[in-house]
Length: 124
Image 1: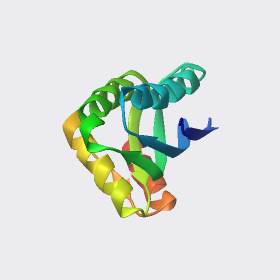
Image 2 (image 1 turned 90 degrees about the vertical axis):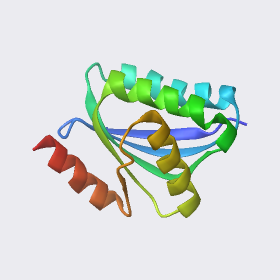
Image 3 (image 1 turned 135 degrees about the horizontal axis):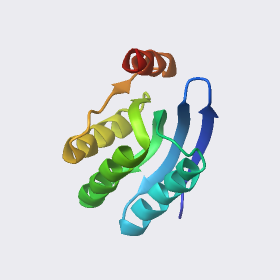
Image 4 (image 1 turned 135 degrees about the vertical axis):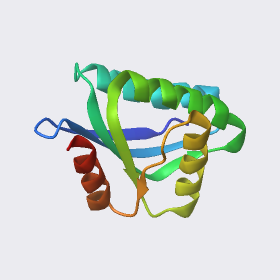
């Protein structure tokens, strides 16, 4: 069953906030998840920063290599920098593992405010 992603763009900060609610088990889930991102990102028309709430994201181990490959592609195509936040330990662990496979920094923080501060430091 497909999940969902909520998007909010702050034009002044050139920053997209997302809330991920998706369990990724197979290739079709990865394609659906990142397809949602690409459809939204294409509407912005320039590179930007992103902060994602990952508490509702679960990436199953067997598909993590493909997920990491797609994450790296999306980050390179659209993002100037990114941070994530959440308190769910399982989500944090799976995102950290896939980030390592994608050779991307995990940038996981405890709160949205901490993630915003990290992005502000990147922008400085």
